[in-house]
Length: 341
Image 1 (cartoon, one colour):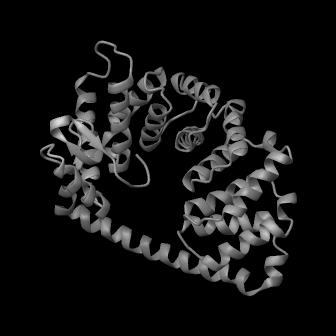
Image 2 (image 1 turned 90 degrees about the vertical axis):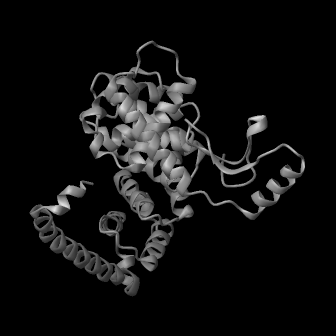
Image 3 (image 1 turned 90 degrees about the horizontal axis):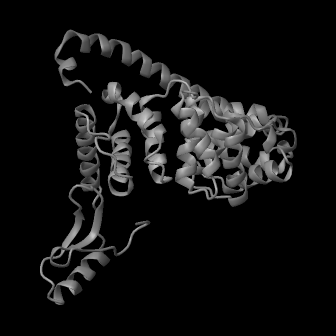
């Protein structure tokens, strides 16, 4: 992120380090793909594999970003139909779903089979904080909504406590992303843990995730947010664009829906971060504007009504979200189409 670095001799040293590292990563990925194909080509090998074997294999593929479609399809089917879930540990199931989600490989039937097995088999009580966070994160990442299972996982968060910062961050983000109803108790437990430092050191990305999640869950005024924001201020250089967009949405929620408290979040360092995050969010909103043909037709119809100027894909000042159409004379936003508003 520091352009000046590349005008110094350090850049050459950095390159010398990164090139061989990248080569080793490619070698690992190729080796992983070759070994994975053994499962595809040898039915006997796949048939004698346990859930732990396959979970480890899938985990390795995800770690080196090796996508093997044939393997993921066959392994998922074998886990579901081969009776492996009966003997699989909750850790095996969690790692397996995490690998599928991390690589963005959808397998709805596998997710449903794992959820059913854990709920109906009464095995959720054996899930530790790592299992719960991986299962929640996987479902949120793949937008796999299983009402009974996801609500039971959310309730389990309060029971296991979440003393690991990564597990706490992933669980909170997933509950917000999934929109799990009735998770107030678990959210409060996490807020209390964060506020008293019970989740350990939180990374800059983790703090951004949690601030966004708490805003989505209507907890933008909680003491946990103040703690997370304070921990973030010395490390703002570690935030990428995505992180800054999340923090902007926290600031936005606090400004629009938060309780007024004089002097809150007004120190200079916070104002600088607020401005940087708003800039990143507005730039991102502007970059992804893609007006549809339907929007164009609706705009023409609205113009014929004589309402004056009609702006298309207008980014709202001070907010950053874009609306399909905006009519300044009426201060009116019109949403036409798209996946969500």
